[in-house]
Amino acid sequence: MAIEVVSASMMTSDATAHIARCVGGDLWVVSWLPGRTLTGAQALAAMTIASSAHHGADTEWSEWDRIETLAREVGLTGREAIYLVNIENHELRRGTPPHVRHWE
Image 1 (cartoon, one colour):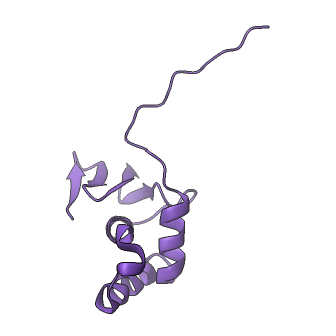
Image 2 (spheres, one colour):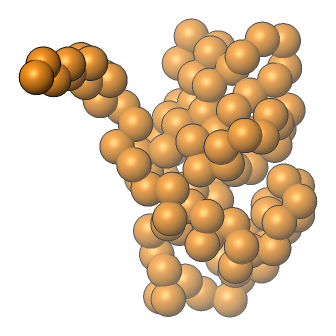
C-alpha cells in the first residue's frame, strides 16, 4: 500500500481508486469526503484510511486501532470512515465522460 503525491496537487494510492486533490495552499478535497476541505495532513490520513479499507472484516485489531486514530484526525470514528469510503466508491481516475445531449 503506497500513497503517492503527484505534482504536489494530487494524492493517489495503489490500493484504492480514491484520490485527494489540492485546491490551493494546504487545502485538500478527498473523493470519499465530498463537501469537506481538509489540511494536507488530514488528506493523507483520509487516503491512508481509504487504502486500508479494502481489508474489510479481515482487518486485524491493530489495524482497526490505526484506522480509529486516523479517522479521529478527520472528525470521524473508524467505522464511519470505512462506511464512507465504501459508499463513495467511484472510479475517479477515469476522465469525465463527454456531455451527452439528447435531441427530441
